[in-house]
Length: 541
Image (tube, rainbow, N blue to C red; front, side, top):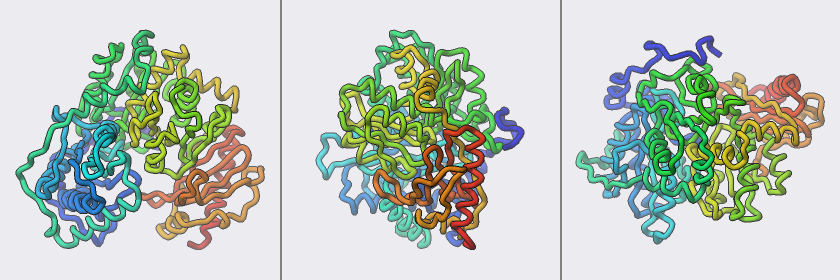
């Protein structure tokens, strides 16, 4: 934690945009450096041109690989292409469109030359494919590094199901892209002339919100709502939502600046558009008493932050529990057997809420991609991650998006307050009265590359400890109970606490998520013993 966390950015904190864009055009990646290869994480390929990790060469190769992959999969329709407000997003979109055009793939871009939030692109894919024949299915490219710092770029592929591509697809695309780069991109087709077609992402997305939310109740309540897009792609969406539905909604800060000079610094001194961080949201929190409800989104609006006058910035886990409690008691059109989806590092409070609702819990590994098939068919009506990402189905139980939707979850907070007369913070307090008050935290521990590899392949039976923080261990998991997929780490549970350990994909650390219903001191004990248990399992790795 830096002492400057939560303080305004200074000029020397800001990225040099000219240098960033120059490196994008001019730098050629060195594939002998693993950090400069194409690597798809849970949310696409990310990196900075300044590090040789996100350049014109990368994006041309990735786009060519996507063209070849979609052809192999039989995807013949046009492809939606949208970008957020990061400085590298615009040139990356230009590169992608040139490659798509040369390959004869029709691209659909925003009709207003506007930025495109991730959920709006997912919504567009699903809307287009609803009645389309198999040979005319559409897919999409989202150009965003999400909440990452201004120096970064990101590139993500969403297949015709509308959600993030699965590991089979991303592995194929990354492998092919690196082959193309190794060959000097000689097999990449490209042309300067681009004939992209317009698509009104904003209009279609905003017009459909009435099918998933009770915005009439919000309007009738007279709630004073503040929405801060944090300089991201949702800025013009919020303005249209206010106008279309007659809401007393103010776009708190409509500024778009690729340096994000108006932001406050995150915990580590970096500019990061994370709406779940009290440090990054410090300037938003200064307005908490000016509105009945205040929300924030990250740069591509797939994450949400909820601020109430009585509770401040809500912990994402707390809000997920509130959203689930409310939705499953206020959506009579949902399937009676629709499950509640959560990632295995999300709060056990969700488990207790699910049990109280009499609903099946579906627990999956980290990554929103795991929710896609079940959101599509309505067997899971809500899917949420501890990192402030979630989506749910429409009032009639049909799919809305298969990617995270921060705009939707932010607006839901207003519906909850309008319908119940309570803020989400107040409802969470009621939940703790019923189910207990858990303490939750994520910390990092150092690990070598070998140790991270070992941790990612650990099996539950590698844990020899029988107790955790004074309680008998009841489960040691290396696979998610919901779908049996590998965790890429492990989770250890007792009757009142748990921890999960996963290797970081970008740093020499592993992440320890932990929660205890025994209070903060017991949580600290769980964290200490978790590190010892993991270190013992890793042994001499």
